[in-house]
Image (cartoon, rainbow, N blue to C red; front, top):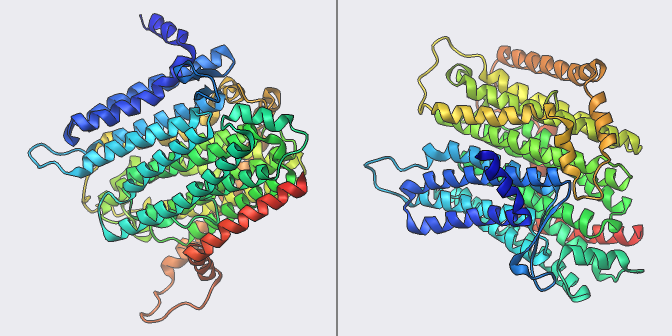
Length: 593
């Protein structure tokens, strides 16, 4: 019976693409009919259906070995709106469904109205906004029209911003407003670029624009300007360094479930559109010079984000700056792809999936730790390893993927990027990847060294989390950790429907070589040295007498780094950086061309 049902679903073909768009709409309509007390259960059922639909779409793309297409209402572009699911889109839909289902299970306790208590707007708002994010990001992955994608981005933004301020405190409201205004600046830049494309070619369909741009002998100046405007606008939404004005304050006070969605999914939507612009719409404009600008920003994000993460005293802020660093890896693929590396896109796609699962697990684990201890101060985590062993284990396993240790998805990403960097002669990217992994190991082992030891009789938790919450966090962490054990056929799915994707033979050879003993040991021994150094530093700090009250440390590189971070998150500086990046990208495209 199930086989027959599966076959019937597969026969739907492109019509399958409507299901991931309709399920969130059903959730939004249900919010108008049912109250917040029961909406969570309906939303969870819809998320289960969404996971099944995403799996069927991925199976249809894999078995058909081609992208799925569907035209809404039967109208072909440019009059109609087309949907498309290639291998990358199918993987992103599946990743989104897995993460949102995990977040939904986790949030059943925090946003469920207990029986006998009056209902509040908090529960209704959370589940409604979660459906909005789900619908917006699915549209981003399937849309083929620049204006449709703009609408999807705005739905994503206007659903994500209120999640930051669900508790209604003044500081979270200020953080949400900061996020909203900066995201709107990015939207304005994106829309200006779309207007330039429409004014030049009379269409906004990506496939039609790609044909017109590829067939032109010379490109009008409006094209590189439009590309630069759209890219920088999306960088602001992706919060790539140095455009991270809204990221730390947004995560500082947001509920753990909201932080998990923001870090794992929301910022990936705008990054996905950057991939669409550069690799689907106008691959010829990705000159090595322009790609190096994006790569340099990614490298700076890796180093800066990890170093600032080491300076944090709160667990949620450490994970937030870790997100800034991990986003940097996504932009290393641009100079590698421009340098004729065939595996760059595959590495970027794997990084999106591995980071989404790991970071969702880490944010939700941090939420459980904070609820249990009553705080998330890193130096006061002593005892959490005994009180919440599964949660601390999940946090550590998610961190292993961020470091890039086998058998995690992060290890595959690190292997592919490092090999591509050596193959294209861009050794500086190889060094950045290695340094980023070691810095990540430093702050991960520092947190674990604080959390794992504890008194024999740990203090009673403020709030004992449910076993289901701990298990779902552990499951997401294991997804990131065991991603590297998937068969190569799963990696081949990423290449379907994307002419610029990797040659499967090249990827297979690199991944097979990654499991030799020499490569495994080479990835492990530097991390072991970092772990030993962290333990030594912590032991020395424990024996060092406390600094007398009223004294302060002299200016240090760490404090200078904090001051730089504070400067970059000022409105005048962030606005100036937006303009500078637009000018830099336009110049590099014109010179490169």
